[in-house]
Length: 127
Image (cartoon, rainbow, N blue to C red):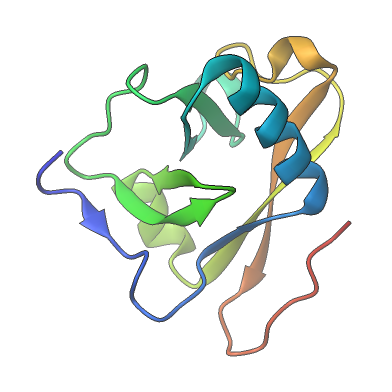
């Protein structure tokens, strides 16, 4: 994990959460303790933001830390970051079944990633 790039202090707001996502995160933290997110790049659960207890997901040397939402670090795979480096990720929570490995799976809600271009304009965060 020593070589993980940390862009959380590069002057860009690269990740944020909607109020719905923040509420779900707080519920999950109350049950599971400290959490982290990893933006999936496809595979089994599509491109969902995956939520894990800290320590249950191994951050890779090529992962990139985008910032934090509700006190939880948010990472993305290096190759995925290269495709999305011009966007801000907006983590939202919507009704539905969560991804199989993500903590919100049994709650009746799921995390969803929305995005906005990093163009200097602050996008309105969806509610």
